[in-house]
Length: 192
Image 1 (cartoon, one colour):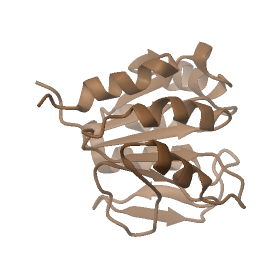
Image 2 (image 1 turned 90 degrees about the vertical axis):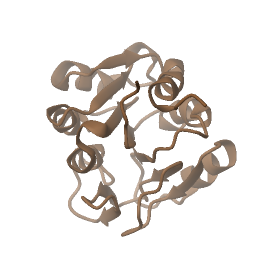
Image 3 (image 1 turned 90 degrees about the horizontal axis):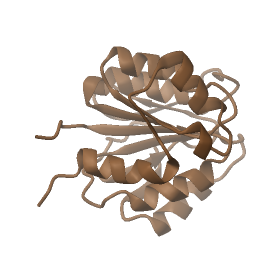
């Protein structure tokens, strides 16, 4: 019997477009979970990520909007210059609070708020990136018994973020980039 997960959060920085292109299109259209993503962006970035991935994914893809309910089978990207947070009632909150690890949106902010909302029903994925954003959030995910997956540093374009997560916070699984989507599908999709 598979554990019932309720959400997936992904944090990514340098090398993110390539990494997400390997993972997101391969997620099953029967995932039946929301996926919330923080990709480090410059403040003036447009909605390219949501538009691009909406064309190549079987799940719906959009930029997150403040106060919207989080829906299954939808991939949400944090908009540029806003922290993406999950409220206790499973709605989106966007914030222009101070940068965390020099970033807004910050991965730690998403991971920590999602951990508080979803507890042990959260899957957290840390991917390629050049700083340690995400590590503090992973500590909270692990405290609340969520599952943490790190991209193998060898398959990361920039290994700093996954290495920090593995060495400082600890993770449940380390997977090569191409193994992540199949693992998520196996972990979450019910057989018909």
